[in-house]
Image 1 (cartoon, helix red, strand yellow):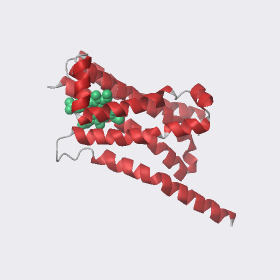
Image 2: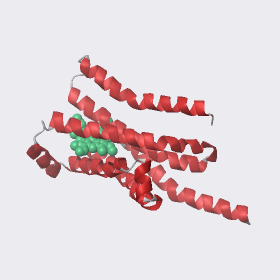
Image 3: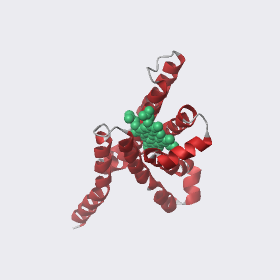
Image 4: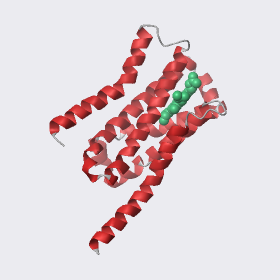
Length: 205
Ligand code: HEM
């Protein structure tokens, strides 16, 4: 891939990732967030967090399947960090707009409503991943430990999907797409390892 193409693709990715934040800010300034602005902010940021998380998880299997797409790896950290960004805006919007910065009300809500409990767990799982996303942290932790820690992203994605299911009304199937996407990605890991091992064995024979 040419350097200029990579730079253009990175710029496009930045624009696409910033899009929802810019739109929400514009809608907030112009008072066009709709009849329930708080829910609009919360639902948009929650959805985008999970979407970006799942997109970042898709990069490794795709590049393993298509070796020509190795350059995709350069986008994984960007997508992961934007997932954390939206997850943090989502969490802060809850703290400010739903709980009104009332710590006791928040703790009671976390204890009482299981979808809030798992949402908080999901955000807490993303925190160490974002904190160790720098090249310095990778060097400090060592590749093996870093890889082990970053497996947590799968746990976070599973918790995020459960949070989504527990948040919708019974019978609403909106979280199904994300659930199927995540299930495919989870199954792709062992399936691809097996396929690549078999390919290597056949090539060596
Ligand atoms: C402290 C952490 C979190 C809290 C308190 C929280 C709270 C909430 C609340 C209150 C809603 C419902 C909004 C409404 O119905 O008006 C919601 C929706 C949602 N949240 Fe979270 N959440 C948290 C973390 C996360 C994280 C880390 C993710 C993703 C990995 C996430 C993904 C979602 C999704 C996908 C929705 C539904 C969006 C939709 O229906 O389109 N949340 N969350």
